Image (cartoon, rainbow, N blue to C red; front, top):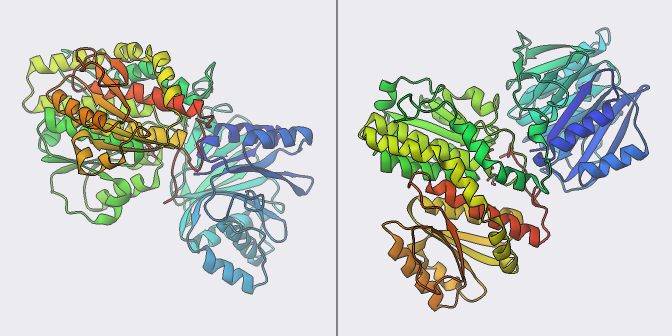
Amino acid sequence: MCGIVGYVGNLKAAPIILDGLKRLEYRGYDSAGVAIMADGEFNVAKQIGRVAGLQKTVAQKPIEGTRGIGHTRWATHGGVTRENSHPHLSNNGRIAIIHNGVIENYATIKKLLESKDFTFVSETDTEVLCNLISYHFDKEPETDEAGSRLLASVRRSLMHVQGTYGICVLSLDAPDELIAARQGSPLILGVGPEELVIASDVAALVSRTQNVVYLKDGELVRIKGTTFQISTMDEAGVSPVIDQVTWTVEDADMGDYEHYMLKEIFEQPAALENAMRGRFSADNSTAKFGGLNLTANELRGMGRFMFCACGTALHAGMVTEHLIERFARVPVECDHASEFRYRNTPLFTNTLFFVISQSGETIDTLAAMREAQRKGFKVLAINNVVGSSVAREADGGIYQHVGPEIGVASTKAFTSQLLIGAMLALYIGRMRDMSVRDGTEYVTALKGVPDLVRETLKTADHIKGIAERYSRFNDMLFLGRLELFPIALEGALKLKEISYIHAEAYPAAEIKHGPIALIDPECPSVFLVPQNELFNKVISSMQEIKARGGPIIAITTSDAELPEGLADEVIVIPACHEAILPIIATIPMQLFSYYVAVTRGCDVDKPRNLAKSVTVE
Ligand code: M6R
């Protein structure tokens, strides 16, 4: 979850690292720190809080040096204190390290090191690893070149380690070098003409270079001056593949918006356009995807689909489940990746497995994918970040193409996952029983999504007014049915993650089985009530809430007529095809949670306790 950046080049390292950390802050923002090597010592600056605070400190007392490492922390081992902030130094002060991940057996290693008189100033697993490297470094033959000793000691230490890591290590004994390694946590090397930058995420690199090498699990990179060598834990050399990043710095900037989340909400028409581009058949009656790595026949032969994901991405999977079952008539299952990985669930032989992940680094999703692959299943990925771990390990997949999503609360990534899910249902449906006419109508609906989203975004001011009136409540219910139940779940998740209001979601008819006990004038309900076959049933659920004094916000379609006075607030979205309704219905949910959070003075882009990509279990 933490963000890490390392720099070796000819320019001052500190400002470059701090700029990178600022761009990575969505990975964690409990504390930040840098260690810069200059004149035979490490200059360390670290403090609790945001990178901006550290930037101020460093601006007042500039740090010289052209090699350094920096870290923005999401606390795992040990509280949010300066001592627990990275970088950590070894007892002798000669090795500095930053780490993203969790060393599971750190307690055992710590005991061993304590028996050898090592002491610790922090509660972190990272400081333990740092001293382990230092311990091994001192045991390497002194006749060897310091850089080789450092690489060997990092390798030896990592052999003892269980868990996940993306690390960067500096040593005063090898002042020209930086060693980085990964296992389960992402690391990307940016290759500039006269500098090398290493980071946990491309967002930190794009301001320096578009040329990157995605390191694989079990690989180490030794940076020496402006050259680098990659090798494995078994000391085998690896030929680097240099990829081009398509994102630009502007894509990752906030522009004139007050928050990334708002920018990303308003970017959705263009983002959804990109997600669809080039993905329809010439006769506009079905979808097409380039990277599935399956023949039409293989896909046609699949008797079942399984989707695994976490959080918002899981909600996209749940909508897709509904759409595939409805339009392609193939059974679909959807599971929390975190549960699937341990459930050892029996799977039908001809099941096609999908994972959905914006970042492509969510550890539970990766583990679920690996588990399915281990059982011999092909796994396809719906993923936004090109070159991510999920993208590289999947057997095929569909990129979302919506550009970097920086706000911790997922918005444009979610609606593009919904869009791709709807396209998938069409694609599979047309291979089965969906007619050309229905397919053509479906494609027309999909192509109209960007305009409908644009139209729905025009309700922003109206929704802002509602949000301001409702921001004082501490509990809310979100209710929807069929394909809109997962959208109710998403609405509740969005609200709780950025405004800290307790929110729960249910299929509307479920309220009478328990949740209705919560209803009173202090517990509003947000109802998704489109004109469809269950309209009257949802109206009945609303009546039940009304009868008990619960305030009601209704999100309804333009072709529906709500009974007069039933809802206290009404938000009207355009009537549209069932397959795209979840996308359109999501927009008011996003705006509502955004404006509620802003009214409550919450830090929308960096909600407490959260991080954008969850790379620890
Ligand atoms: O990167 P992923 O799509 O795998 O992330 C999964 C969840 O952590 C993520 O969707 C999370 O629930 C969002 N922050 C919610 O807005």
